[in-house]
Image 1 (cartoon, rainbow, N blue to C red):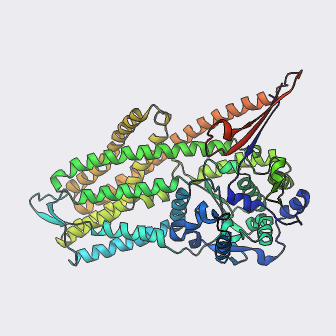
Image 2: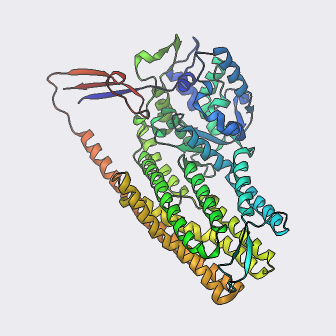
Image 3: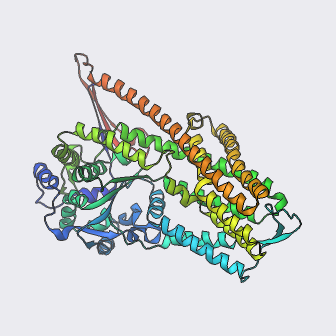
Length: 573
């Protein structure tokens, strides 16, 4: 084979965004010269919006259908575009540039953005709501839900009034805050900050994307498997890295979009489990804790298995990154005129800017493969799941222990109430993140990652969930025993010491195990890349006859939506 060329279809929104419009379109060389300077022609062209704007109505502006009715209802779409553009405003500095592929599942991006911007306020507000519920229950404005003996009290005949008001209030306030919190941080989103229907404003906006990136304090990469295949996503990475190569305070932040649904699902699973534990009689708690932990961890293994598969693709994308692999709309002559409107070649434009900034596309490839790969690995943590996101997902466990503390406070056993509060705090920030990290490491192993069919995959997940349950019993059992042997105060101090020791040791060991596993995968990728490079450098055979073939993929097969390949041209000897 002498030559293979793939021609990609682009989204309607992206076609309109890349179209320069009008008869005064500059040449590619002039456009590269303008964009590569990273300077604004007019300072008033720098626009931003607040993060709350795209996230209103559950991320309405992040959905690709916002301008999907241009051909049917053009007048309405122009009005919508003007209204959306009015949500942006002139500024001198932008907190974050949102870099993402419009082909990624929009619901995953929305959940990830809600957690990124509203997760910490939601956790704080949820904890305040839990405290309010606790106070109302202690003052007996809210009734107890079940009368039962205590699993941690020596007197097995004494009954307490247990409730889940703190947990219930916390979960409800958390979810409401997550959806409706109004973040004032400034961001750049092309649909809002670049006019989508005015040709002149659109052209100025597209030519100024590099300048926008220069004025951003950070760049938020919402990664999905299509990200590195989008040429303009590659341009955004290149522009930001070049503009801030000497400023370490301005960084690229990477968040896989699947991280959002994984975190929120974990939050819901934990919330349901702890409420079930609190509302059961003491003589059945042990059985329920074991059974519910087994089910929860089995589901978690399956969830994290998919998450780590996505991370493996992320590592491969950036470890073997090449500009040439990104697709664009204008890679053939037929697409240089769209509906009578002349457009510049995206690839020539983007690669021209990259070569101006880095000297060659190969040098930029090396920057991404080395610098960005290491940066993203550090941001995701030693166990490939950031610790602070674990804490956000596991906070219902702390609210549940606040309910327990309230029950003992009503019974005037203040030392036991304080003990349960402190144990809950230790579980939330120490013990449960350790169990989660253990489950994440197991789910990332090659043994679990390998597909064997639905039934066997679930069976292996159940086996791993049962193994991870042992960690739950170690932490819960040590808490009960320490209180029974040393009393509420001494037992609590001893339990906190146990949690700190086990958690620090476990994170250290699990982090090293994950690092070795990632290194092994990276070495395998390097070997494959070397083999491909060797094949590419081998001299081809002498051509005695050249043949050409052009396939229209729409007529030959139902190609995956991720690829969006319209035609394939092959030339061979």
